[in-house]
Length: 455
Image (cartoon, rainbow, N blue to C red; front, top):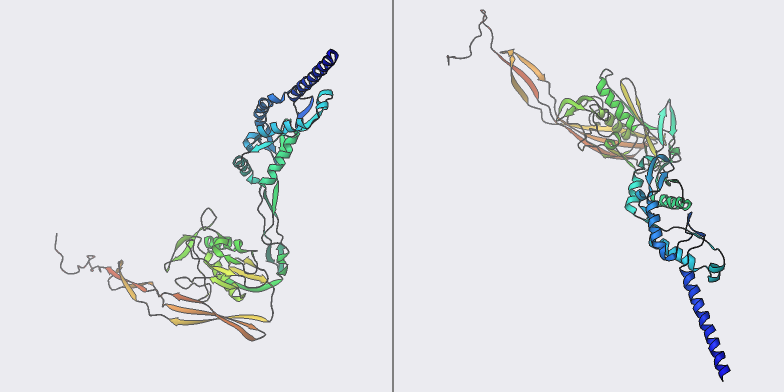
């Protein structure tokens, strides 16, 4: 009986010792220092106890915040990781290390040297990352539309070019990938660029094969300032392509008429009178375009006439524009692209509509005029003219209303007749200066008008 009791006691003791030793080994191995093969990216975790990981990772987070970061396309622009809003996520990285360590079998922890390769987990502040991306907008390139020109009687196509713009999401992944190679003296990563195709491609311009219509106006070659403005506006239109259904705003195409944009002072028509203004002359370009568009059977969306007739286009066929809202707008009404071509001579401007010519098609413009009431005669005193003398200051002109029609013929048959516009040119009064200067007597004394008394 005593032997049995002694044996049972021994077995129980051995069992308890085994359980205690196992529990001790388990507790020791759970918070045992990480092996020499444990690495976080390229940073060694050897000797760090799991219970001490949070403090160790906080220190590492502070170090990584100062990590130099360079964008591959702009190596001279140096930043730090913290400026990109990217930092080590201590809690998530801590858990990743514990999970990796937990997957290592107990016997391997005790009797071997396991290797742990763990990638850091990152936290990001999107606003900071976006702010850094914005600093590299200079790397952007806007796409360039294909353009078509008419030179030496031939159609020339200037090919379109793709543009590119930084891609924020893809760039973020590039940075995170580059951080896999820590530690490093600096982290270099490429900004991902997203391709942006041009609105008008070279292939689309293939349908433009010839001249559909053209119109020429003339101007005095000696008016240097005015002709300079005409050249600027014409250059802004040259080569522009309109896809089917697309519109062209003259004001948007030419831009603001300011000294900064290169325009110069020249005569303009304001409230029926010619005055000096910035950009004088560009209405000749818009009027020339108006007539080319009419003959090319393009849709006239918006157009206004001058307050008084101009001498470079027929009455009723002018188009005025202003910076303050009066615009000229046309639309490509065909099912294929068209282009505008401008040619400037010493004293002439020609605008052509390029597209797919239809030899059997012909456009005819007709006008109907209605006279308005005869203008009044204004007499104004002029102290520089002797009494009884008169001088015409302004000849004046009668007002007129003009209706413009467009007729389209195919093989000689009228297929379309439309009323394009109605223009009203207001009457301009005739102004006569009447002399009010007293006549001199033979002795050089002015003859008085009525009775004069000394005051």
